[in-house]
Image 1 (cartoon, one colour):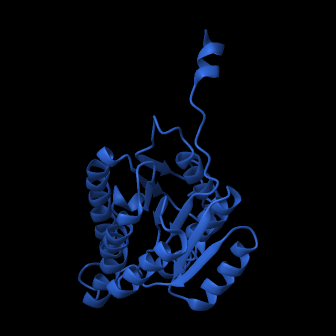
Image 2 (image 1 turned 90 degrees about the vertical axis):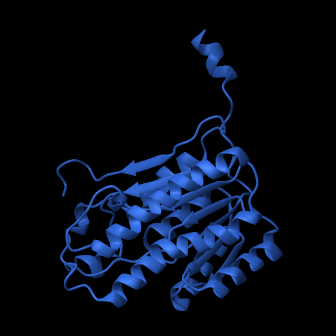
Length: 248
């Protein structure tokens, strides 16, 4: 009986030929996810604010799959609109949206945190996620998926990181609301909550962080690909990834 059930189980959907947009894809988790999706046969749209890094990532990925690389500040309404117009002109649709662009800030208590830093973090991590999602949704249909990279800070608080914590808690509320709104349309929404991951973000947040004890970005990327490859009958709503117990 078990063998029969296994034989009749729905095959996981292939990601080959899907069109995926990854914001903040020039380094760290974003670049790792772009590489992983390219290996699965996805056509890519990648963004970043650093044009030199964007060119390097675009050249690397274009050796394996079609790539549209566009500079885009997710805080900029005009830039986000132009990005989505370019996606429509190039690919006509969008199957996977990964809201990965984000920033941290140096350890500062609320009394010492500058209003400018607060505004930059909230606009990037929360408002930017809304803008990209808002303008990308008309390109998406049933069977599509949205992955919002939130960090474990969406559920925990870290003293000295008030703007980052607030942006990620707000982004989790946005993600949970989005999931319920898109459920009738057949678009999956996944909250990605990785713990400490070895990326350049730590240069700003905690320069002395023990990065060798952290998860590699490739581990997070592999988990995202696995979640996106699940049969449509099931989904992962929250994907929590933590370093091995005792390493940090």
